[in-house]
Length: 388
Image (cartoon, rainbow, N blue to C red; front, side, top):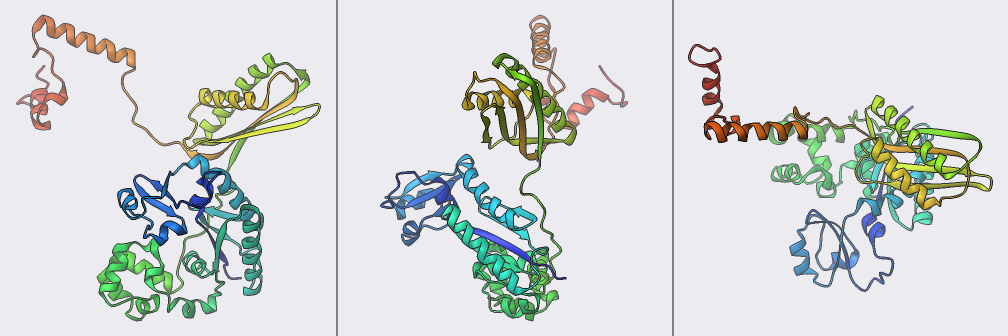
């Protein structure tokens, strides 16, 4: 059974996610991040504003544009809506950005007809539920699926070479301008022309990236779709024999945060999303919050969980409480400090005391020496032994 990979891309995702509620469309909208455009509405594009353009140039071309600064927190609700829909139709989903990602639909699609039905259904549901503009492409591997999405096409393995041959290199913006420029200097403007000149020539002129592109066009793409959505989660729960009061609830909440922190430490991960579920005799209430930075310890978990508890309303006895953390990120390694803040202050005071008594040159820091050799000579001495 062949592979069927889908690529889903949402047009003007950031405009949709971040546009002001009262925006009437009278002013063009431009979303920027780190001083560069990441998305522009049609009105701004008509004025010459393009992705990657510096903000200063935007103000010159389209002075009436309303500038929106990219905010991850504003994007999460729409992101979850879209990828929940894709995940409902595919067992393996891998978002690669807020607005685009892959899905391995090989277990639910067996031929081009079913693939077309899958594409149409996902396209329709995304439009209905989010009012967004999706582009969906399906092919036998990730590369072909991504190219197919530009044309909203379904490409079977037997049709891939014929489909790819006339595609302009300029349509594949994720390749990078350096590789495209190199190929264009060779007179290559389409994917079919890249294959015609042979892999050895491409490797010589464009290096490994060119060779990778050649393999992709020929259908060799060993990258698999990873199951990254819905995100992995950890949860803890406490059921009460009798409905407990607020004081007990807050104490239990702290204990649950400690349990979660231990689980996360064992798995080597940190969450960016936290959900609190409360059960009462009248039903359940749930509050979820997404964060742009991971929560690092039990203290941060408890602080955020308390805020969610306040948002849900306090004072009503509960029958159970459940805390769930998700969007788990691997813990990033960091350089450990040899000194605590107290120890550092003690050392600084000792240095100052020695200098005030014996002179400024009595104690020197390694950073004060010009080079490693001078520092090593002073430490080791001529006979390579300690000279202090």
